[in-house]
Structures are given as structure tokens and as C-alpha cells.
Length: 149
Image (cartoon, one colour):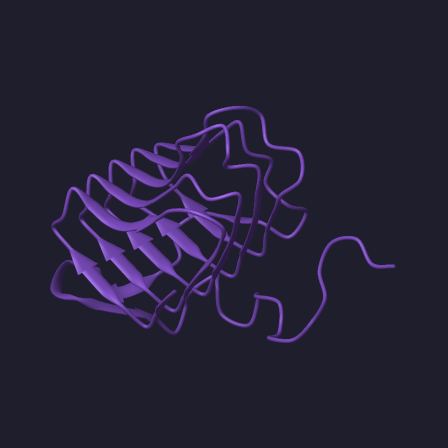
């Protein structure tokens, strides 16, 4: 698990291997790949991925199920890419502002596209500015998203 972490200027910000993995409240800043996973299950919640070549990369055929909610993926060449067309994942309530937002990923109905208005990311301030289109738009923690039984 990665919780409230910061990776800067790395080849890989966070590498997730094997089983069920969680990345919450982390920042991947100016990495070649912000997050790479070959995990069979992953939860990515409340992260900021900024200025990476690839924001999130599902690099392996095991990367089949992901819950990717309340993330800001900004200023990357590719926001998220999966090796094969994913069909069991939830990608919703994320903010996307990249050259190419997704490859083999389907954005959720509550996706926000456009500049998230980060205060000063070049100097490490990833807070949202007062005019940000991301303010008050994420799903509340503890709220169920996707299919329910």
C-alpha cells in the first residue's frame, strides 16, 4: 500500500505488483510513468499524477480490475493506458487534462476534462486553486460507485 506518498522525477513513481493493492492520496510528479501495475486488483483513490509521460499504466495481462476514483491526472502525454481493453474496472470522478487522456480505458460518466487549476505544481503545490473545475466534484469517501447488489 502507498498512502500519502510523493514521488518526483523518477522512472516509475509507484510500482504495484501482485494481488490487491491500494494507492491513496499520493502524488507522482514528473515521472516517466506515474503508476504502473501488473496487479490483478488495484484501488487508486485521491491521487495527483502530474507531468508524467504516462500517468497510470496497466502493463500486464493481469491488470484486469481497477477502481480509479477521485484522481487528478494532469499534463501527461498519456493519462492512462491499459494493455488490453479493460472491462471490469471503474474509472470515474477523475479529472483529465493530458495530450491523450486514455488508451483502452473508458472514462466514467462523472469524468471532468480540462485544466484542474492546480495552484503551483511546478513548485510542488498541488492544491486546487479557487477557480478550479475540480472543486466539490469528486465522490464522497465511503460512497458506493458502480454496480451495487
